[in-house]
Image (cartoon, rainbow, N blue to C red; front, side, top):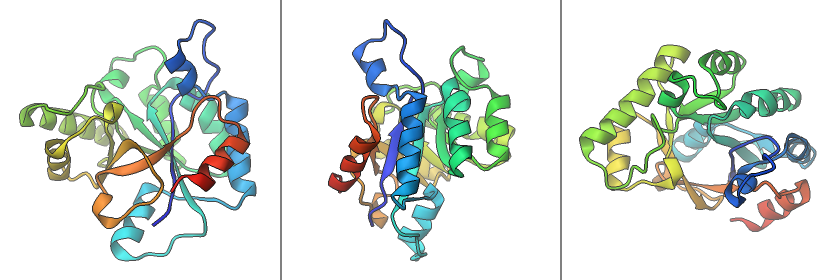
Length: 227
């Protein structure tokens, strides 16, 4: 089933001294606006990860040209810049937050008050672990601590069990999947490139990386090419 899952990080201008990685991860707000306008004008329909799961496992119908918008890390610019634009276009994003970082009120990241405001109007939140470690090769006890910690913090503040994990830095293995399954997560997102999904891929969903340099036309080309 083809349903591209776009992967964003920062939605802001990178600082002048930004390294190549930060520049690559930073989509300026005006460019993000162009992306959403293109998706709307081109007839894409933003769905949720839950919608995709139901389609894959229960055969529920999806609209034409389904697409999912995901945001990793929980940067404050997601609230300041991405959120108003999503509201402008009537679109829903899936935001993956590091709960220990939020709890510590770390500068540059969303606060619980901001996250709760977004959730009240339908924006979705999932886990990006407690503190962004590489999960691959870790002990079961450590993975349980990560899985339950992220789950409990989101449940405390938003009132629901997070259903999805975005693996930090795309780092995971079979044991990571087993632990998150046992913690009643519904699926997991990787950083592998791809836009087509099967029922067997629920814990290894591929995504389409959006780079800071991508214009709306670049995005259109990427969506045509990426299968």
